[in-house]
Structure formats: structure tokens, C-alpha cells
Image 1 (cartoon, one colour):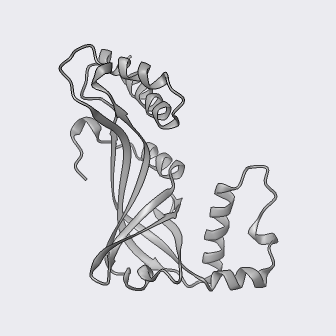
Image 2: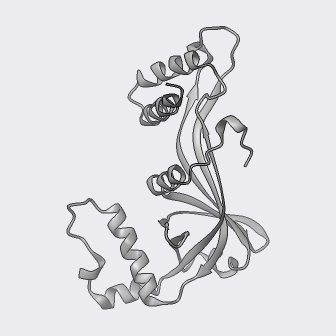
Image 3: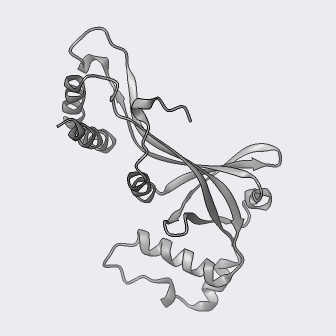
Length: 205
């Protein structure tokens, strides 16, 4: 990914927090000699430095994905930036966004205990804190049947590229103007980008 120095994110804690927050990703590989992508949720295990997930078994991307480098893209909030928000007429439109590219190698997981634990971790991540739902309470035969319908995997992370394009190449005053306009909206992407921009500006105070 092309990352100008203004926009590069190196802080591992920030990167991992982002991956966990925006965990519905796009996974790219070569399948039958062509680029192929699947959109799916992934869970991060920081201590193992791996991602866990699963394909539907009928999605044949899993059949030839091992022993090749894959790309996983985590896309965060993004929004249009109008040049009319600047203090000058010398400006052009742009787009602010946060994106992380993660590279790694995939291993198809056959161990039923590992598969169950990865599925249960995913359920616990997305269920509400007060939810009573837990895979351990679901009929075991039913779960065994469901597991037969998926191809579970783990991705060993080999490289991460993180980019946060938040108008850092503009003056602090102009960034403030952009934040003001983004906050004057109910659009959630706009508000999230404004919040990230404000956090970034804290470095200069």
C-alpha cells in the first residue's frame, strides 16, 4: 500500500485496537489463477500473532490458499473532504480514511477443539456483554454438523501496513476547520474521522 510519511501508523497497540474494532475484513488470495476475495469477520489473537476465521466450505477459496501470501484489508471510517471548508480557494477535494493491510500465510485448521474455541471467541466478541448466548450451551450434535460446513483457518501475520489519512499534510488551523465541518453532521463516518483527527492533533499540544 502506498503510504506517505504523514499518514503512516507505526504504533502496534493502535493498529491492533483498530483491527479488533473494524474486524469485518476482505481477504484476498489467488484462486484458480485469478485474484479472489471473501468478506468475513476475523478475530485477532495478539499473543499468537494470528487471525482466526472460517470460510463456508462451499466457498472454494480455501482449497488452494495455503502456501501463498495472502492479503487482508481492514477498512475503517472514511469520508469526503470538501475544499470549501478551507480558508483559501486554492484547494481540491480529497478523502480521509483509515485502512490496514495485513499480510500472512494461512493454515487450514482441522482440530475440532481449536475450531470450536475460535468460533466461541468470535461469538463472545460480537454478542452483547449481557447476552446469555454461548456456543457451549448449544446442542453439541448441532454444532458438530455446523462445523462440518465450514473450513476454519488461522493466518500467521508476517507484515502489517497501516495508513491513517487525516489531513496531517495540512496546517493545524485547516485541520481544525475540517473537524468543525465534520462534527456538524449526523453521519457516523464523518464523526469518527473527526474524532480521530482530534486525537491526532493532541500530539501538537
